[in-house]
Length: 624
Image (cartoon, rainbow, N blue to C red; front, side):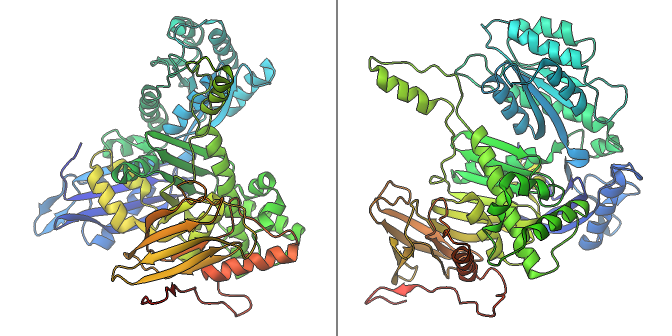
């Protein structure tokens, strides 16, 4: 649905800051004209989200040089008042304040209906606090106590196919009823439960849970083992998020009035923007949004879109947990200098106590980036575990029983993530968007996601993806245009062969054709990174010839003809292997990491000896 407008105000109410942007039509295009933020005011002592919202609006008013409000109310549509222009034509809003939408999901089998319910909740922008199933190895009393402790905003319950037995679904309903869950935000209202399971069990679920919870029934998310229908459950979750969760948060009734009763969860809006970008370019995309407490990962492969949230992996409140889950040695492997383990643990324990602390020295920045690499890596591994095909699918067999057995194993529950097929990786979040150098952000994405083949890398420069994602529901073409011109910063192209190379071994030869017809050649060398200059907006034809057994996207040893697109960093040839190969000895490992940082010119050199970025070596007889 395209809605005509001259000006737009978009606000994202985050857990700590409320960010406002103004987008205006300039000629035939739309552009970002102002951005401002203020502290979010949902929590005590203010407990009114509108205080922070109005502060952020007044700050963008001072930038655009005109009033957007009349008194304390938003002026819509845009109009002339005397000689001045007042207000905006359109207002959209997203929110993750107060912890966002926190849900528990339940199903009969953890790897089937419970996993489908988890995907539905994540796709609706929720943080999934726990997954309850009959086969999750916990005692009944442990499941009941867990539900009582969590105090979710909402519960999504699935289980069984539409022609299946209802006894197991009934057991899940009994556990939930016994826990009598109470709402996180307090008050006397009842926790909503969305039932998306076996339709034959609907009346039983209503009878068992209806006395203590508000039960809403939607079509089964797994009507058969071969089908997964998530959208009705996602739409109902979004509706209940507005009516039950947002309506009871301090001050949100006024914000809902501003937004014409439509506020999207922030992660849902970010995911929408990822989908719009992927569909517009017919591209397979991985996106990562790393925050202080959580890290969201998004992927779009063909018609499959997935979102996961790692609720305890972040850069402030959750840093100590990153070190525990990743193990300290995996954090330390990214450091080019020795560090005392005890001091490192103490540093990040203090970071949890003072989560807004920023790195004060170069070494602290390098250490913080090491933790960010592991937080994103772990979150991406978690994402791959959930972004899978349906489990339990019965494939049609043949007379070849051995072939059928392997086909069943390969198709059922396999991850849909193929890093060789990824066209673009998009990074967002303070540690990436606010990195002092763009090369730091690019290297963070290369080290954590470890893209293979030929991949474009980008960063969201000003945290606009939530705003533009909700705008995409109304005007997708406008959202995409502003996203690509004012928000998305191309870092460059990464060429990373899939192999396990020896250090110094040539793994691929690249032949380049520039726009002026000149040619050049270079190589990908095992254990090394090279950065070739290719500025933003520049393109260059590229033929990659891998050595035997090395894959750059077309199969082992097969040549690939493609195009390199420039960016803030350039064209990066990554010969470190996949997964990245580190030298065994600690001193050799630190020396290798230092070489990689120097090649990327990622930091001011601690030894005052940074080498310049590599240049293209000309082909004999060709112009450079």
